[in-house]
Length: 150
Ligand SMILES: Cc1cc2nc3c(=O)[nH]c(=O)nc-3n(C[C@H](O)[C@H](O)[C@H](O)COP(=O)(O)O)c2cc1C
Image (cartoon, rainbow, N blue to C red):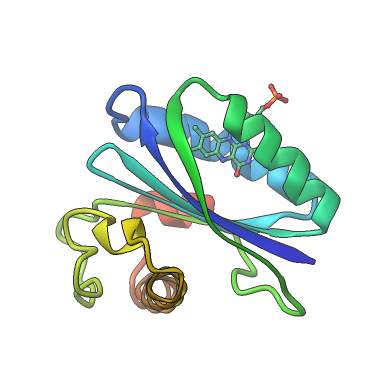
């Protein structure tokens, strides 16, 4: 299995409805292709982790790169994994009024930590964001997240 993490820039701002559409479509297709992961949207930027069989992950990444709903797709991390980090498909979107632990430094408003030129810093930032996202999702899922879980 492999895992790919990337950031990208939305072509136009996504509201709840567009995000829900994207989530519904992705969830169905990912489930059929044995893919899991998470998608986080904040202020016009996406951060996504996709994990599963190598062929399926690479095939989806090709489709995602061609998707004109976003641009500047930048791979942060591509690695072999023995175990999935996301056993269910989840998605976070600016949770309002949901009790949640603070995001790691730098993630609160942007994905700036992920834009570093230092590879070690990026790997640390992806890991930190992954741990934070999982803890947050377990603690209290927003509606979108609940709909997004299998
Ligand atoms: C930010 C973003 C994340 C996406 N994530 C997924 C995903 O996890 N799974 C998926 O099937 N499609 C995802 N898509 C949609 C794909 O880019 C593409 O539209 C879809 O796979 C259908 O591709 P096809 O028309 O070539 O079959 C995403 C699109 C965007 C803009």
